[in-house]
Length: 378
Ligand SMILES: *Cc1c(COP(=O)(O)O)cnc(C)c1O
Image (tube, rainbow, N blue to C red; front, side):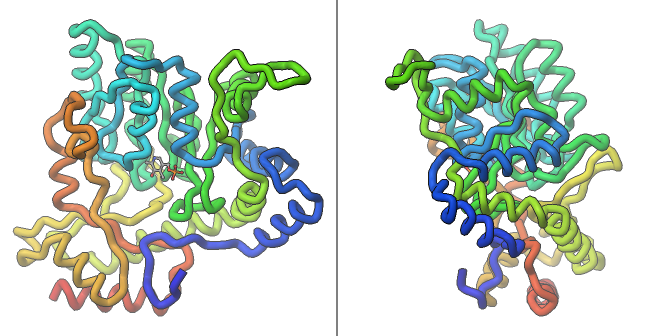
């Protein structure tokens, strides 16, 4: 990537990745099977304290396979947090299923338990019980895990936990990715760790893990020739990507500390600006990886400064920033999908901005960001 621009969240190599890639090549495991995949999965399992992780070629594939494994079929309804990246919702359409979007609440910006319950009851009243709930830990801040789980249990609807942005985040001391009936991660180039492109599923047990690998490798039945009785997918992670992942897992802890330091950095930058709040966990039950540090700007209190003024000011100095995820129920693609809520996500989208948060930002780059931000604000 071009080095003079300051990017929102660039890849950050740890140092051992090339060595692991070379091992893959030297042993001629350049494939979608090989020890590198097992080693990467084992290191994720060790980190998460679970036994059943499957490495895939993207987070999107992971969500798609999760829907398939939970039996979501054409015409089924799936509840999904509206404020998220489109990858959370697109796989619902891949299955021919119907997304039902649910608003956020203000504490975590994630799926609102009140709106979620209303949606569940209303969909049941209209004749169809939703088949799954897709809840997201946006920007690495955990959703209201206890409340969402209580609803899922009460109405017997499984949760797909979209932890794409939340590797290393935790709720009440337990790591994100382990709360859903199925959890998913993404390792695309912008995430806390990257495999260039990649994802993973966290499954309840080894039977489910075996089944996920079966679907991800073209659903080959047990036979010498290729025999297929179920629809298969080519979703497995490649060994080259897994080798990068092995190297990235070695630096995960230090990457997380640096992301956290970026959050603290912005809290200090904005501490004297009453109209600007840095998005922070609501209380000590929540621990965020702060994948991206985001701010809300109350223009009335901030001398008329808007997120777009800040974004353009940063862009003029070759610093990337980005609006928050535009809610899915406002997207042309999903304009016909039902939506439940009170326009909280709309107002967040209007007021918010994501700031450069990479774990490899230098002191000079941070100084530049601070100087440009203060210049825009004063
Ligand atoms: C990154 C991301 C995904 C998955 O993305 P891939 O690029 O397919 O790995 C899914 N959900 C959210 C919320 C994300 O940020």
